[in-house]
Image 1: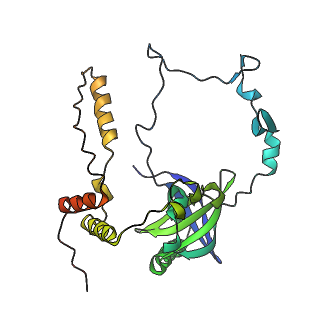
Image 2: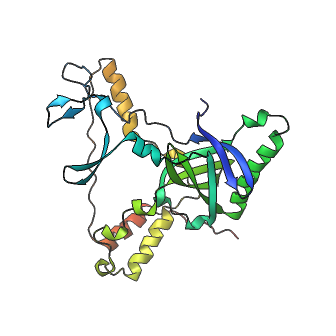
Image 3: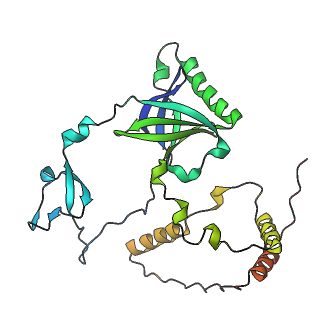
Length: 279
């Protein structure tokens, strides 16, 4: 099934304007959510309820509010929000280019594919220039190993995005802003004062284990969601009235708590010939 276009616009690259269309890059998990039922199998409905007046509230009565102190809200009317609504320009405005190694995937929130807007290519004498502009941009990012950083307005909100070459086209990452990322210092146990000393022999054995587990090329296709597959089997069986029997797997040994012994045992279990370095 062909991917559906979710947005059309252009990439503003200096004085170059590249008509593009955006597609969602991921597919919805078939088992991402379940319906909630009562004991008789009836689907549950959710009502908007006011606990103070003890009554159901209709959608027309509902307003948006932001809590500033406990049970104290600032009410925002639709007109208030409309007044600060950002103008949709249908343009991904490139602000700068960075080296790909400086791009941190921690900031990625969503992924999209970007393709040329083939609809506009139907106009007379426009096909070569539009296709060429898109192909040129892809080729530049690929050969310079750069990532384009820009801004775009989606659904009345301004988003920071990163564009990079991917296979034969472009992928766009919708990014989190810096203030949306929790500081690493808040993670317990990783401050400099808490770091234990790593011995040279431990580091050497650890590197050997990593080398033994290193693949020539990453193939994500060999991985799949085992839980989703078992869930699919369970639903199919129950829909046919079959009884389900689950075989319990034997728990794996927790192994040794001695780091050196664990590294040595892991290396002997996962040993493989060292890869030949290319000249």
